Image 1: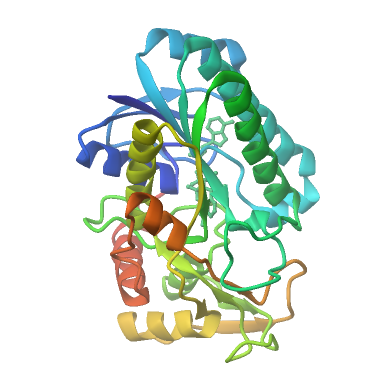
Image 2 (image 1 turned 30 degrees about the vertical axis):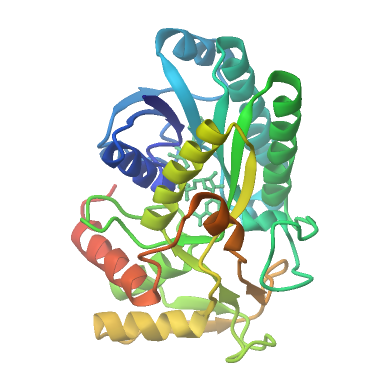
Length: 326
Ligand SMILES: NC(=O)c1ccc[n+]([C@@H]2O[C@H](COP(=O)([O-])OP(=O)(O)OC[C@H]3O[C@@H](n4cnc5c(N)ncnc54)[C@H](O)[C@@H]3O)[C@@H](O)[C@H]2O)c1
């Protein structure tokens, strides 16, 4: 079964391609390589092109016998989206409409979508359940919410079946060391910490006076391999049950920035240089997922998401690959 993975050369998309291949499915990567990497395409063919190119997209669906789509491609920086909202509406929302229209016109009925906990905004309760009110505090989160609504209405209009997967903080690297996290600029906490140990800048800690146990922000880190495997489960569920789903993907456990730094120090045996800074606008003190729905619906359970495993796999990949990456 051929599965089109948009953004398949990116961090989560490439790990998802590996999980698909391991499950006996064939990934077909569609990527414009704006933030993705040729070295990350190790499972399946790569088609280089942009979701903005509607004619090319239609041709892709005509030329390949695509059974389902996993849609990871997006612009992903919440901070940047505050400066350039149009980029986020265009690349995330408008280009997703292009994709969905191409799917509809070629009869492809299943879409698994990379959504985000950023659609919730400031938590009104914790852990965050899927029925939590949606008040995104940046255009990135807004663009993802708009896509979820579009999926709903495309399902209504055309019988599209979708899985909206609301990721919390993806982290870690492939267990075999074949893939890892490589964003430029890197804004995610764990790779930033690791780069600081590989000669980079001290790690900024944004906010040390939150109402959390140690004053730093708390996040729910999910190992990228667990996340990738959830796509395979969700795809199977949506196709076999012919039912849409919207689920959180996290662990249900939060770690503070300081706890992450301490774990990195324990795993690497090195002291992490830090720089304490003020809070960033829009950063919630704590974001933790309620993951009972994903467990109940498709029997998914994170296996590799304890913090030491996340840090060990990421450190292994960063040390091995850092010098080779562009
Ligand atoms: N990384 C996280 O912690 C996290 C958390 C929540 C949600 N997400 C979502 O997961 C998805 C993947 O994130 P990631 O961390 O792997 O990011 P990434 O930047 O590594 O991957 C995105 C990929 O999409 C490609 N792309 C972007 N725009 C494109 C376009 N118009 N046409 C074709 N390809 C395009 C990029 O080249 C890249 O390969 C995104 O949708 C993101 O919003 C990520």
